[in-house]
Image (tube, rainbow, N blue to C red):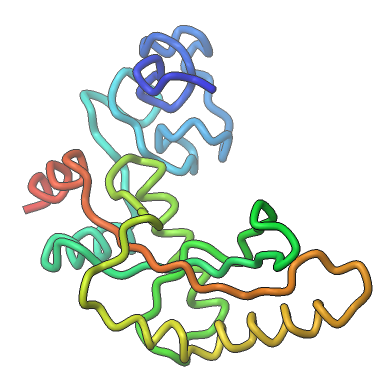
Length: 190
């Protein structure tokens, strides 16, 4: 596992000069420099690679979400977990991150929002914390959502099959927040 302080601004594990890969970025190679269709997220050092001087490339959807999170400070988040009643160590994530705007949100909508959230987290602009649920927030929209109910039915149906390891569905409550870098990025948009 690499130390974050050794990461190049483009996300690779080297000193930040990008000489390790001679600024040759392939489309969607995951470097995060924003060049030729890459996902974005450069924190500097990728001269000629689509980012210079600490510019972070974000999509319009990411910008909208950062602005919303900037107005609210914290927002609810969840993930759907499968557990085993036979062993407390057996767990598998069914869906994450889950942010619902409506209890009838479709799987497609939840996955699209989840991709935006993962991208912002990968760029260190937000934190997704499943061990920090919002106090006094009513997570019933998640519990009552069509997706969570479908997840619960699927786990129950699977548990009826011989040899199925996971027989418990669980909603893990969490929260998301801007990071310091995320607040700086949001401030620079104004």
